[in-house]
Image (cartoon, rainbow, N blue to C red; front, side, top):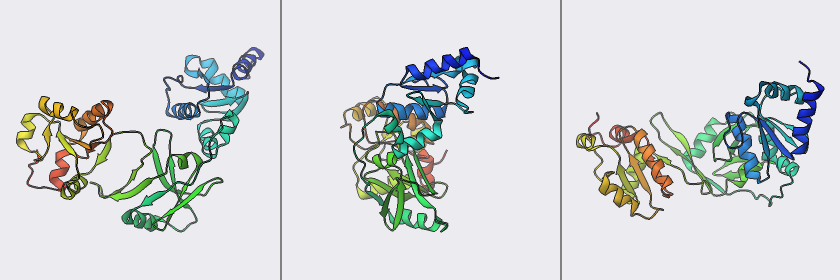
Length: 307
């Protein structure tokens, strides 16, 4: 149904009285869809004030804005009264630096990042290259989500070569990539790329059972905590693990916050929750043993009982 003059005036007022306004599901504090949340993240990163309109609060607004913009999806971003587009377009504009120009944000020049790729990862990448002219791309989102894939080269890309492999970064990703290391690690289902990024905020990191064994063999300094109850520890245990009981927690809280701390349980779920808790306590080098003691028994030490 065509918009009435009154409806069109209402939308005119919304997009013209605010320099930046986002029509979205939810609001800037509580996005209610992933696409809206991605655009909110980009706008918050820019530091520019913006307003939001929750289309879920009024069906007339939800349907009307699509008619007003002649655009079928939500979210929709307007800057200085101009409709820019939805999530994919906003992400692309941000990656190329065009959104920052629209917002009037002055950014320091972005330099080409320095990266490292280990031998196994480089070989895996080269073996996967189909020779169709596409390039390996690494995209790093505002919350340090990683996408590693083959795709076409784009204007403004940064090209970085390491171990004979060329990786393309868009502008936004290049800002987050300096010092990154890409390795190949063995996993329960074969193997996977592991990305270590010194620019990434602290989060719980995954440690495989073979990696934990390698740490032990190398004499790497770390503390290992078993979050299971005494009944389970009586069935199976990793010898150097501290029980996370009252005494173990006191010991843990007395450590330097930069200490490498590894948590494990039976399959990895309870230990992940414990790891996230101590991340909130200020620990910055926190790991969860992938697959728990079950993976340790299957992949490292078969003498450890399975249950």
